[in-house]
Length: 502
Image (tube, rainbow, N blue to C red; front, top):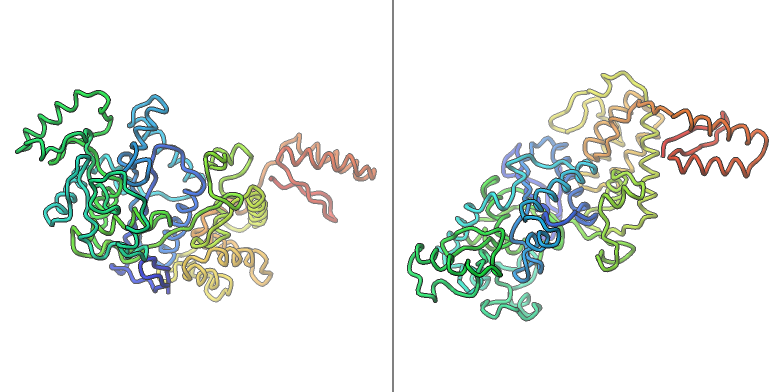
C-alpha cells in the first residue's frame, strides 16, 4: 500500500485516489525568465519519481504542470516588477521571446535528467489561460472575497477562516510575522493580488467610471504614458492589467483536473505563500477542497549554505556539463537523499554520484541476454514484471518506494540485485528494467551494450601495459592519468588491465 506524507495533515497517509485507476496530479512548474537551477531541478526529479511510482502501483496519471510566463513579481508576492518584463529589458528581447527561449531550455534540461513532462495542453502557459483566470476572479468577486485598490484586485484573507492551515500558522500569526506592507491600501498584510492594473495611478471606480466603455476610455488615456506601458496586458472588467502570480495554478488545475483532485506538489518554499493562496482562492470560489494530498520537496543547499547569485553558487545543467558531469549523475545524487530532507550539494558529492553511475553502467553492460528477457509482462496490480515475484530485493524495492518514495533504500536494493549471485543474468536484467522504470537512470539502454574503444585509447593502454611489465611505475601512473583525462578509467586485474569509460 502506497503511503505519502501529506503536508496538509502533517502525517504519513495511505494513498486513496478519488478515481480507482486515474490519479490527478498538479506540479507547479517554472517561471520562464531564467534558466532553472539545480535546486529547482531537485523538486522536479522528486515529482518525476512520484509519477513513476504511481504508475508502478498500477495507476494512470493525469499530470498538469504550469508555465509561469506572466505575473510573477520579483518579490515573489505583490511587489516589484514582473520577472518576465525584467528579463526582457535585461536581454533586449520581447517577453514572449524570453518565455519561449527559457521554456525550451527547461524542456531540454529536464530531458537530460530523464524527467518526464506532460504534453500540451497539460503543460500549460499562464498567458494562454487568461479567460479562465478572469472567470475565477469574477467568481470570488461575486462571493465577496475581493476588494479593489489603486493597483489591483485583491483577495481578502480575513474572510477565509482556514487561511494559514497548510503552513500551520493562523492568520494573526502570519500577520504578526509579516513585514510592513509597502502597499498601505491592503486590508491585511497577507492579502494577495488576483489582478494587477497596468496603470495603477487611477482607481476606475473612484474616477467616475460607470461602465466597461468608460473603463476602456480611461485605460486608453493612461496608455498614453509610455513609462507605464507593459508588454503583457489584457482587458478585464476592472481595467487593463495582468494576473497575479497565484491565480494561474488554481484556474488551470480546475480546468484540467477538476476540484478536488488528488495530489498537488511543489517545493517547500511554496507552502507559506503560493500554495496557501492557491488554497484560499480555489476553496473560497468553489466551496470544496483544492487537493487531497499536498507534497513538498525540501531545499537543496550548496556547500552547506543557500544558493545565491552573489556567491556564484547557483548552478545550472549547463554549468555541470561544462565541468564534465553527466546530468544523470545529478539525478542519482538526488535519489540518494529522501525528498523531504535537506540535501547538501558539493562537487565532491557529485563526483561520487558520477563514479557510482559509471559503476552501474559497467555492471549492466556486462549482462548479455536474449532481447525477450527485457520485454516481460507488466503486472497491472503490482506494477512489476511477473517473473520477479518472490525476489526479496525487488519486493524491498517496491516497499521502499511505497514508504513515501524512499529512494535511498530503493537504490540499495538495485545494488543488491546486481550483486545477487543466486539469480541468473536473465532475471537480473528483468529486475533492472523494472527498477529503472521508477529510478529513471536509463540503465535499460545500457544492458549488454558494447562500448567501442578508440584506437588511440587502446594504444595508450597497450603502452601502459608495456611499461608496467618493465616495472616503470612512474610512467605507468602518468599514462593512467592521461587515460583518465581522456575519459577512460584503467582497472588492473590479475588477467590484465580493463578499460571503463568515465
